[in-house]
Image 1 (cartoon, helix red, strand yellow):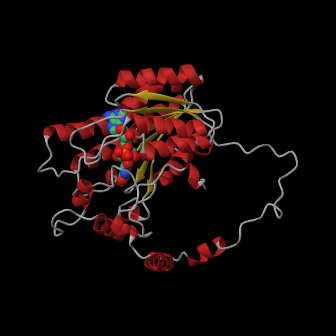
Image 2 (image 1 turned 60 degrees about the vertical axis):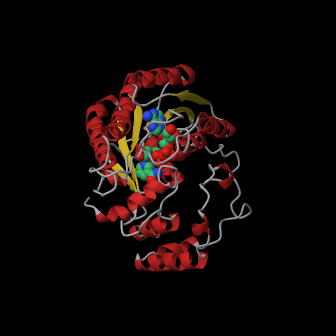
Image 3 (image 1 turned 120 degrees about the vertical axis):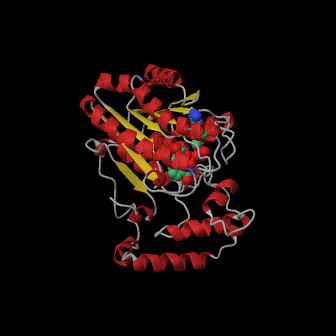
Length: 345
Ligand SMILES: NC(=O)c1ccc[n+]([C@@H]2O[C@H](COP(=O)([O-])OP(=O)(O)OC[C@H]3O[C@@H](n4cnc5c(N)ncnc54)[C@H](O)[C@@H]3O)[C@@H](O)[C@H]2O)c1
């Protein structure tokens, strides 16, 4: 796994979350683990790691290579959150990265503060500190010409484009009875049309080499209903439909297309007051403390966490970008801490 020092800083725990007794959490984990029949599996994990002395390097062994060595990847929504984690994971796997982000307000209806040029610059700094090249492009995924120019830049600088990750997205946490026309449109335009724009921009460069990997970040809310944000759900169901259709169309050109569908992820999109109010039963009056929203969310997840980390999503994306996934296409892969068990196959 990754060295903690390389990880983007996690959002700080809220005061009420920080107070939560650790022992209590362990008990819940233990109970869930036992209930899920995991005891036998985890027992093996308790073995001490092999020491350098007991596992000497093979003489003349080649240096370990990343799964994306020599490749290049374009990632949208790269300034922070899941996009930044994907950029860093790709760099660790050996890829050069073009990070594309609006780095500013995408809609006045979202619950989280906008990302900034400073956030995108920090992603650049972190990727470069891993010894990989990073091209930083400020742009809006609603503009297909802007994405086409970004693809040209990546091909110009890196020589080719191996993978594209359509990650940029927004959440407007308002019900169908209350959402404005503009709020509805913003979500569909960024999440669904923005994903299509990203894929469409990458097709020529990938088809020319008869090789490419496309990954979209959908959501668990693209696989089930939820009374939180119908525009968000509709956009993510649409993303999965787009992925499946594009996989059928583009397979003949050597391009795989897949989606990753996470549950709540520890990012600004999720951890904000409007989101907490939207996901917590209306019986809770007034401002919803993070601890209340987190407890409600934890209760939904068989693995006992309120949300997963951006790196958990990035790990799945790395598999889909890699050669290991050469025959994996047209599918959506859950990272849901078990919540995905509630919907049909
Ligand atoms: N955080 C979650 O709980 C969660 C769960 C499931 C899926 N997702 C999806 O993961 C993706 C990343 O979300 P995140 O949690 O990292 O959110 P985030 O808000 O932390 O980051 C999203 C990034 O996308 C950028 N962006 C937004 N609109 C853009 C546009 N029009 N053009 C270019 N860039 C734009 C933002 O500036 C920001 O840097 C989104 O598609 C989101 O829907 C998130």
